[in-house]
Amino acid sequence: MANADTITAWITFFFGLYAFAAGLGELRQPGFWADMLSDVKRSRALQFLTGMITLVLGATIFLVNPFNPTDWLSILITVLGVWIFLEGVLIFAFGDWFLNFAGKMMGSGLRIWAILSLVLGILIIFVALWRLQVAT
Image (cartoon, rainbow, N blue to C red; front, side):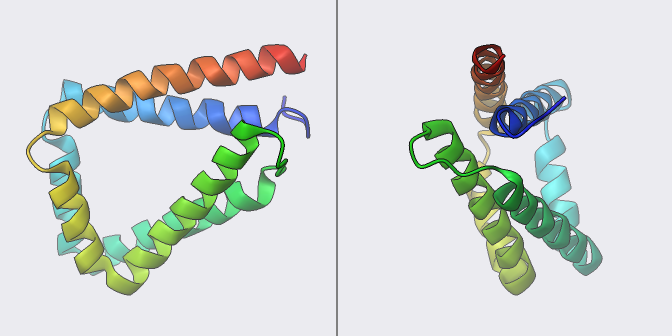
């Protein structure tokens, strides 16, 4: 169970699981990310829901993570929360432009992005588990 000393590590752990699962999903079903992005670009309702979920998730991470200026992981998670929040704002304000930009960033190299997501997910999970081990 999380407490004030382990919140940052738990957020890191779940973010690592997300990155791992997303990468694995794209490798298992190539084109999944592109299809999903295409669906969101076509639907104003999905843009609204994506923007809302992203904004709330980012704000929650920012508000819940105990910021410690001497802890690199705490700083990283705080910055991640702000970035996710800003993504939500951008999806609300400039959904068409932002999603086109995201599509260009992914390009045709989805397999590379998926492998990167998978590897980063594993590394992030190990960092979180190491931090949880140190905290106990």
